[in-house]
Each structure stands twice: as structure tokens, then as C-alpha cells.
Length: 538
Ligand code: ADP
Ligand code: MG
Image (cartoon, rainbow, N blue to C red; front, side, top):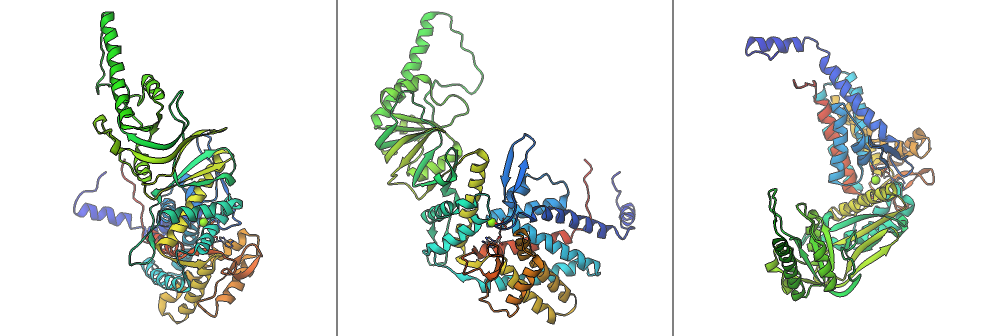
């Protein structure tokens, strides 16, 4: 029943809140649901983290270590748990890496908040306290970061390798890390007069191909089209090509509506066929006249983009034709080749074609693909051909490469690096613990709780590496106790003890850590402020 206006609605409200413990129950249930999500992916954190095998309803299997991917595929019902899934996605969009860390930190903060609530501290006070703690933590991590020069490839390589080290394909990081760095450096656009550079990840096209191993992954300065040419008997290799990209079809036109043409005598039938032949011939003649020898055709959903007759004629004039260029790829193709798409036959002229040094159809056991290199007047884009022995491996390699690309992009955007292995979290935790001592009232508890929560990163890294988390965290706490900004002590999972991560070259972008801390705190504050879940009527 819908609540009536005035006195009645007041009655409804008072009856809802007669039960004073309801907001607390709702909050507790939200916290527990969200913590469950965080616990589910805790074991995946770090280079010694475990992988997850995800089985979809259709039987498809994904093996991954990436937090965002795991959570995206998990079926989560509780609305608060969904907020953590969103949190991981937000981190993926903002930074591209740190998607497991952000959820693990949020889980620890929720745990801390729960204990504070039990002490009787009001949720708003906790929320404000966490906000203050976040500001301090961000200051500490910024203070311990070291600026990098974007021409310093070694620093970029270290950051990319750190991100790849915690992936399923970590043994191939020596191949994938340089590819990620080269790709981003090739498309990087320095901000004039400012720090850092702009990077549009759409300029790096990652193409997945089954066949070969991940070691065979290659970077191509040019365009790769992952299917064969449409020719039956045409050329497979053209040097000094003249390429045209068309958005119209070379096949008999069709009306938008369903139509029937009834042909009652054979002379008329002949005329229809002759017309069609003439129509196609006319288009092909124009293509030949313009001097085009490689033709790219946009995919058409209304009709076949190329009729058999068109292929026959194009074979005859020795023009390579590649059909089914997806509509969303047109922008990338145009930027790579430096051409404009040609929307009608009238504009198919020599000046709308572009020169490409070499177009070839590469024949591999796993299938054929087209490779165009030497696009002299093209824009700055690159293609990466990721290979692997099976679909699952290729997909995970591509996802890991995406993380590495994002990491290099983060450094380009904000050129500063932090030591990894939980060092920034441990330093922030130590600083907050010191600040808590002098803080008055509830802030004391909030800062203290926030400080303890941050230790979840080093402690989980240690736990996943088979070390004793308590011993490791205590050792780490001692190392950071002096509060020296240059201290880069973190959990060295390879040696099994606490060492300076800068010496180990385990570096990660400041932007990833800062964004993870910021987003996790924001989500926890949002969850704390919820005191009721209202379902809609339908
Ligand atoms: P995320 O999805 O959050 O990036 P990862 O599984 O990639 O999760 O783990 C990232 C964490 O692992 C970071 O805290 C990073 O500092 C740490 N890490 C990465 N490589 C190493 C290493 N070689 N030694 C210690 N810690 C590492
Ligand atoms: Mg990572």
C-alpha cells in the first residue's frame, strides 16, 4: 500500500524506525557482504598470488589473476557487494592496475569501520575521520615517490615488469614489458609546457591470435587486420601500395524495404543481369582509374559488401581487397594510414588514396592475416599481435598487457614512481599511527584504525608468498618507524624478507596507489552512510 500524505506517512515512518537497531543491522549486513567480496580475491594479490578459474554459464573458462576481471564475472547479488565490484571497475578505468589492491584495502577499511562502530562511534564521525586519514596517507605516499623522466626507459620498464610479475603470464614479462613501453612511447603526446604526456590507449590496438606462444607476441608499427583478403585469385603481396578505404558496397543495390521484382520474360532477365554487370564494372573501372591496388571495405549489415562478380573483376585488375572492416575500427584505420574514408564512388579519386610501403597477406598455420607497414603519412598508432597456445592463454596475456600499458600510461600522466611490495602502505600506516597519538577524540581511534587497515597490503603479500604475516609486518613496521621519507622497505617475496624495494627494481606508479587509496576510502565512506535498503515495488 502506498503511504498517504500527512499524518499517515509520519505514522509509516515512525513504525519503520520503531526498531532502533535496524540501521545498525543494515550497516552490518552491508559491511559483511562487501567484506566477503574482498576476502574472495585476497588470495590473488601480489606476485605469489593465486589465480582464479572462472566458469561461465555457457561453459567458457577464464583463468585470471586480475581483480577487475574476477569481480566482473562473479555473480554478486547483495547491493553493497556490488559496490566493491564497481570500485574495482572504477580503479580499472582510472588507473588500469591495482584492481585487486583497491578491493583488499576497502575490505580492511570496512573491517576497521565495523570495530569502530562497535565502540559506539557514529558512522559520520568515522567517515570524517577516514577522510582526514586519507589526506595524510596521500601526502605520505606523494612524499616518498621519486619523479621520473619519461625518456628514462629503464624506469618505465621496471614499472611495466612489476605489474606483469603478478600475472599468470609473468614468465613472459621480459617480452611483454618492453612491448608495453615501446607501444606507449610511440603514441605518447607530451603536454607542451607541462609535466607528463597525454596517452590515448585507443591508439594501441591489441589483437589476439591463437597459434605460437606468448614469446612470439610482436609490436607492429602499422596496421594489422586479423583476417584474410577477399580475393580468390588476387595478389598476396603489394609493394608501394595505394590504399583506399570505402564505406559503400560493390554489390547490387538493395532497397530499404522488402521488395519483390517479378520478371516474366527471359529478355528482361538478361537485362537485369546485364545491368548488374554494368553497375559493378563501372565501380571497378573507377577504382582502376584512381590507381588503387589495395581496397579496404567497411562491413555492411544490409547486404554483402562485395558480390562474387566484384571479387572476380578486382582479381582481374590485381587489386587486393579486404572486406569486413568493422565500423568501430574505421577511426583507427584512418589514423594509422592517414586516409579519409570514401563514402561514395564520386569521391574515389587518386587524392583520396594513401601510400603504404608494403601490404602483405601473412600465411600462418593458425590462419591468414593482413599486415600493412610503412604508412609514411599516417598518425602515431601501433598494433600489438598477442599470441598464445590457447584461447585462455591469449586472453589472459592480452589482459595482462592491458594492465602493463595502463601502468606505463599512468607514469606518463603523472611521472612519479613508488617502491612496491606494500612499502607505500606501510609508510602511510606508520605515519598515521604517529599522528594518531596526538589526535584528539574519535579522530584518534579513526586514524589508528585506518593505519592498521593499510597494513593489509604487506600482510596479504607476505601471506600469499607463504611467509609469516605477523613477523613480516612487525619487521616492516620497525623499518618505517623512523618515518624517513626515503625508506622503501617492502615485502620481498622472492627472498622472503623485508628489503628496500627500490634496490629490487620493484616500482609502481604513484597514480595507481594514490587512486586505489582514494577510491577505496570513498567507497567505504559511502557504505558507512547507508542505513537502510529500500526495495522498489516492482
Ligand atoms: P593488482 O590487481 O592490485 O595490481 P597484483 O596482483 O598486481 O594486484 O598485486 C599488486 C601488488 O603486488 C602491489 O602492492 C605490488 O607492490 C606488489 N608486487 C608486485 N611485484 C612485486 C614483487 N616483485 N615483490 C613484492 N611485491 C610485489
Ligand atoms: Mg597489478
